[in-house]
Length: 460
Ligand SMILES: Cc1ncc(COP(=O)(O)O)c(C=O)c1O
Image (cartoon, rainbow, N blue to C red):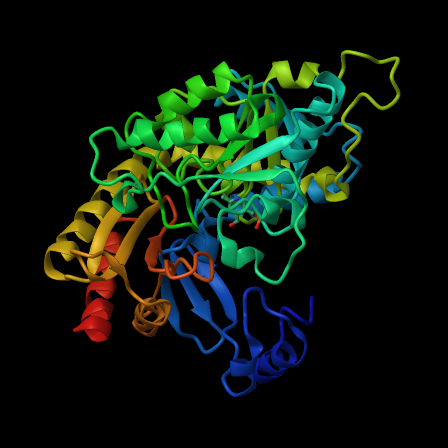
């Protein structure tokens, strides 16, 4: 028995947390007088905290992660069985789950062929950045080293990925940043930079070409994009965007890196967000939903063209990808990921995601008819955003404080929702919804009913 887990007196736990745990994304002053929230159990879509309060989780563990829901015994059992057989060996050698999950994953990703394991979304993206740099050194005389990223996108918390953050507030006070990362404009039509034009998608993609031409195409190695932007405001690229992006990458010999850390493994109703569009990526990274948070695993997936660039000269002792992630050898990750994927397939969760996503969008649009503060509703599958504005005409963003009050009102009502936060100065005004892919129609209705009440409470 683990005494920490079996602890009877929750006050001791709360005080231990208050005294010693440094929480993520948290200003701790408030926790000197208010108890930290401690979750103790989860089943399906429901969570319970240390006081016994029940919550409906509309954000899959806070950050769009627990795709198959809480309390999945079959994943726990598969991980347990594997751990007692073999828990770890460095990934310079293979493992049975590592090989089998890679095979199953690649079956879902036509055109891709290789899987590199690590532990977090940030790390998976760092691998791509390192690969792009090494390709530049080995095949382009060091010139094609620049990595383009898009305004409002996010790729992680390490210094390398922060340098590729299109969210300036994430970077603030952590500089200086690594060099060689260049921003391209966002593609949120609701906040069009080019006025009210018919072909916004193409125009937004051409803006990428303008940056490439300004920087010099011979200096640009890769373009890193979220298929649908998550924390930057749930931005669904407009029609015509991806076709043009694809052409631009081809024209200038630029590798395309799709960050599927949020969209990957079912969130949008397809296995991957990019599969809604006719894209042929060179790199795809994924993390959160790969094992739904039952184990820490991320994958950097490449096509064979990229892979071959790292084995063409065995006589050069530095020519291969000289990278290791110690815990990329933990076998719990791929074994949990295999079972996670089986559940999604056998329970028809991609179909459920599309159906329930439609329902959620319809409910949110109905709220938009009644709440003037809702400026825009957008999303694909169980990945939806609601942008709040104080004036629809001028699209003046609602203040972050009021947006957070809506989140707090839902929480007080027993429903956990999210919102963009401390990312974009003056534009942290989008409510975020990403329930687990198992969500029912009644639960979708309960989530949007709580939002209805919260908007009334905060904005009248
Ligand atoms: C699109 C995207 N990429 C990368 C990351 C970083 O993932 P991690 O927190 O696992 O490092 C995140 C995290 O929210 C994300 O939303």
